[in-house]
Amino acid sequence: MLAAARQAGRQVIDEVGGKEVLRAYGIDVVREHVVTSPLAARAALDTLRWPVVAKLRSDALVHKARAGGVRMGLATVELACAAVDDLLALARRLGLEDADVVLQEPASRLRVIGRPVTNLERASSKHQERKG
Image (cartoon, rainbow, N blue to C red):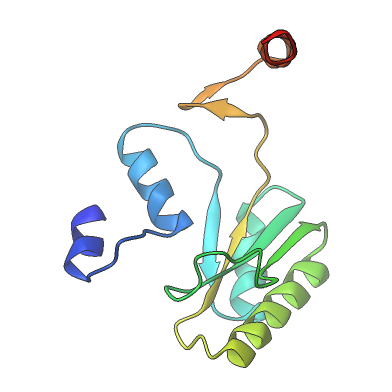
């Protein structure tokens, strides 16, 4: 993945590529599917937990949230498919010819280097920040 990005002259890899690298090192990441249409989304949604997140992806779009390219809390097939359609329309308006959409299941727990973080650790960390 990294060699292909370098060969293509890219200095940044996208979120999907980053997760490929993490998986290669045995680090668990959330499941996701890249789709190019609402019809493809409908098929991909059968394998993801709900609610899903839809994110616009393009080599020309590094900060997708700033461009309005993220839809969260999509709890039904209809909402997810509508979000895919909406994001692809946004891509056309922005002139992003290589755009597709990443459908992602929710993360079940905060992870640090692939290890679930417990509520006790999270609380302890917040306490240390306040003291510090």
